[in-house]
Length: 475
Image (cartoon, rainbow, N blue to C red; front, side, top):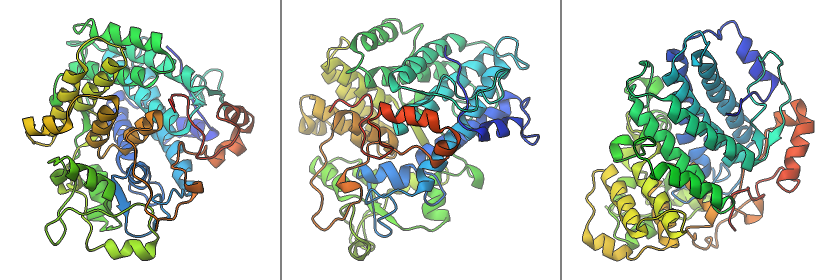
């Protein structure tokens, strides 16, 4: 297992802040860390920092803006967007999950193998967000600001090393998690159900193994074979009841992030994208009725991405809004689903990485996605989609990942699929018209960790821009 660490001097300050004592028990650290990271990945309420809503959901053409197109829709990014999300994922997420590991491991003040395992799963998922967003990141030397030999300027690890560490940690987490073992409190993801945590750990391990499969085929196939070959030791999601999602509450501080922005804060800046509406209409896909609301004429209509405000504002009253399912106070904020897992396995079967029927996994994935929203799969829909291909798997994954923009963006950057339509001739894009491939490193790293930042940039071609292809990119 890799020992993880801190990125800037701010982490050390947080670790030694008398108002945030390091001896705080895991039952309080866990819900705080989970909510902070899931909120960041799902919505983000703060303007100019909405990682999902004003980033990946627009780039993947689930949503489009009807005003302020320079806030993500035209590929423009504010400094706060990449500065503050980096800081929050490390400070609010990783620092707290690492504290949990330290406090609950053998010899820790609150020794509890299940807390330790849960913290390792959440730490891994958070690291996966960071490396998939930025590329090489501080990993092996991260979070060591208060270590016996503190590290205030951590080195950056290449993505293949980060992935190796994450995959190893998830295997260890599965071993740490003991059904019938010590009880845990403060678990706002699975309410203390350790079997479901084990399923999440192993399903997430399959996601990461599949993501690196084109670069590390032998290793990834071995991981998949190990998990799928021993379901008793390595259980995975078996239904939508196992989905990893934050169950938001009626309490304002724990409301769904999209609800807070669009309903509580009365922001009407977004509509569904024409790309999404056209694809679901072509397939006669009933998920359109969940993902979008009909407009005033009772129709589902979207408009193109990247339109200048003078044009985009004309669609405010005619384009459909996001579906009401996603903007309730208690709407779930999803990390990973049974449907996604089956589509991962369908791709792996097509690539020859696992045995089994790609068609069966494909149909199970689509069916699970339907059932996630209370819809019933039909023979007509399965016939419309037809025989499985890699292109169809990735298209269905894109559809199923609605709401999980970061995950869809990562899969698109990895595979180039689904093929997005040509840009509207009226659209105006920044970044030379290139859909962002990564987030720039925060400006704080140039002042606090410049020597290591410079080395990191050599790993991605030398420029701290939004055009560099990341390690797992297949195209």
